[in-house]
Image 1 (tube, rainbow, N blue to C red):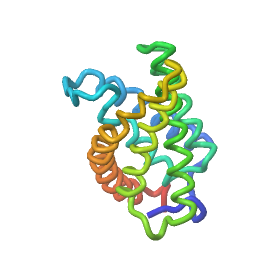
Image 2 (image 1 turned 135 degrees about the vertical axis):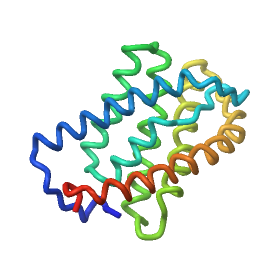
Image 3 (image 1 turned 120 degrees about the vertical axis):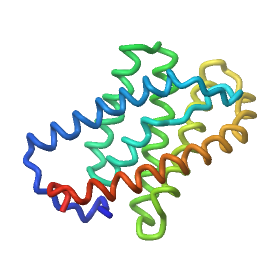
Length: 179
């Protein structure tokens, strides 16, 4: 597995830009696929988090700056193509808080925590970020009452995303660019 401080790329700058562009486009497509899946958690704001597969994968493959760029581009593109300003605010707040916590967790204890652990932590903090934004928008902190329910769905979806990323990274590490 690649670690943020131990990466050795054989990619040219152009190849890296192309790969990052592909990740952004995949994250956008996954966001729209997720919107089409008729899954109802009966909890406002609960989602599968399919685009987080790309976020977590990029955390293992790229630097802070590159991963931040992927998250920002994906969030902006999804909002422009099929979202709203409020959707953008919820998405960006959850994505950024989740990203920062996952990045810090990986920097502190990467050797001790799996992709599943990082993913579950990210899912929980993504939900927390969205709830904090909702509390700010509606000017009522009582909305945090949804947090326990969102944490349960976050753990479940975080495990699924973490397992997916574990296998995806195993495949990507076989590619010559990530030797």
